[in-house]
Length: 283
Image (cartoon, rainbow, N blue to C red):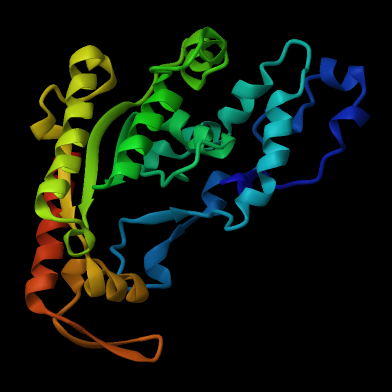
């Protein structure tokens, strides 16, 4: 996402005090660009994709820019909330084009780096994908701690937490709209242990809905938790061809020089799973 603001500037330490007074702070203000120049209709390159879906250019090497982004956010500039201005980068960009779209999806990195915070601060709703295992249960707990500041070990953490910093600026936090659990049944332990993990994730979410209802768009976990079966070979084919499940057919496909088979039953399961998820998102 940071690709949109890629332009040459002098190092911050080289900028004079007069520069700050004039408000010429390129990293902290929206650049003179046309946002739609960075938006592309994906169907121009892949006719499997519907023509009402556009993509925003990203950068596969954004991790390499993470340190620079963090440095900019933590730089002390008189009269400027540098952290908030950096967190608003994507929001400022979308503000210029949001009237063109009904819905905007942001695919965020699972780590809580600053560029993930940039993405989350823009959103109204969150879809949290998890695997139905113990590590995902802990990851879910961490997500609520990092995003909403819950169960932090001390007040020191609370003072500098993402939620605190946004709320101090009068900003609202996104609401959790769905928790999507991927059921990798063929790789899981015996059914009783598997059910225990599923139940513990459900209980975790249910307890949070009771204690912090303002963080959720639902008040019954039955409306918020969606289970999706593993897509297996069908998912590999769909990804390889860049095609939605509903555009695939059963049969044999060539994927990277190997012939693989998509069974009708598995394809129907994938389509049903996605239809179920999308129906939950549409309210």
